Length: 418
Image (tube, rainbow, N blue to C red):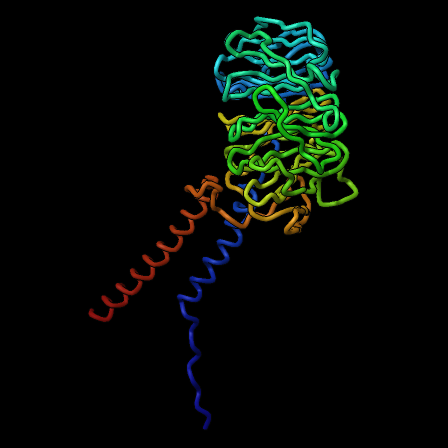
């Protein structure tokens, strides 16, 4: 006689665990993958061939130099719409804002600088008599504005404007060995230096009123951005798809980061570059309809925002957390950065004297592989509302199941007692 054993019922705890895992897989992972991706959230139509761009922390507006429109477009950071157009004449190229006096300084690529009042959005002064005027940067340590003169190689290669009087107070001699025709500028708030690139690819360091150092190693230094979190200066390259990382403490190149997409064939020279203090990342425009996102912590490309046509220069709005990219197609792209830093990379190579880092992931309109929810500053991470809602719903499902199980147990117990 064969003994028949009753079939064991699956344990309810196992069923519950599997249900929760299935729910998390279906509902939570999409939120994790999509909620933190950098993405274009708006496009703003501006004047003809926009180039330079800068954020004014005093009024929350973004100023765009329309190089073929002889004007500056003013974008509201709260609405992402053009609220004013300021005629400046000539061919405006670069923009810098002085938050201490509320003025905006616009170089005209020719022989003068226009000064715009941030409170009225009108030109309040014009400084002429320059041989040339291209790059511009504000020095918060002394309140001066520095202008690069690309028409010069030696004497008067740079002009110094007092932010107090809005007059030219000095000129600085360049360096004919390493810097011919200076074009772009950036200020390092940690050491008080001004960095300048040249039309032939050199890079020099200015302190106060004299050239103090020459940075070698780059063959096409282009635009510049300073990262106050790590003290590095990031320089795009006009002849290759590389971003050079320069240590502000030594004025030496410490890394070279390849950017521009996961397919090497579509990489191209890099353009404008800006630091995002909200995430600690660096945004760099490439000529192949791409903006690469570099982690300031690891110097590795962590995302690529594609579909941005003819990108030029980049600016970060610290008030709303967005990144603005000018395009020669008469528009400005608005990128919403990821709410938390992404720790993995989409096809990037970082080289330095001591190590090489390479990682990859698949390409998409926004390429990234989020694996961490910790912020670069070590604070409390921010999560998208969809993720929070999904987690709450999961807890409701689990608690409901426990309550129903408890109710069923009580019902059976009362039935036995009766």
